[in-house]
Image (cartoon, rainbow, N blue to C red):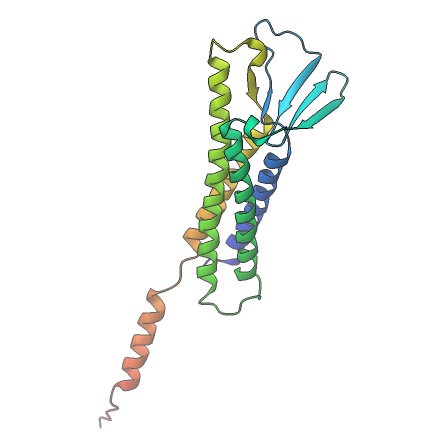
Length: 211
């Protein structure tokens, strides 16, 4: 079973990954304006996220508007909404399970159940990391493809926002935490069975007294 130090590190990585995923889901910084080619007007810039589209003035004023309809969004952002929300819910559940079944807590006193809880939590964190990475990678692919498309006007070109990189970092943290849990949360199946076999053999062996 994993040590308390490994579980503490995994909880910390999971919490940091959850914070990064929430930031990606809430902050409208997935796509930002690109000032390339003939697009030299920098008085204002646009920023798009999963829920809102914002216009930022050079003076610092920001005006945001929710999307009028879900059908207005491209397919990558529609899927990103679902995947980031599922990742937040799944990672929160896994962190709570890991905290209850970790070696540094006494919420669960059965030592045989703790490795199973850690393994399930690790698998859940790996799935959360994959969901976040798929969501931001899909959005990043579409942004890069449209940026390199010569048929797209320069005023409509976008660049990668900060949330894309935060999402990649959060996904890597989830994968690290899940990998550590899967490696260090394996039940001890060999030593216990061998010791029990030898103890039973010693108990059943006849006592012989030699003079």
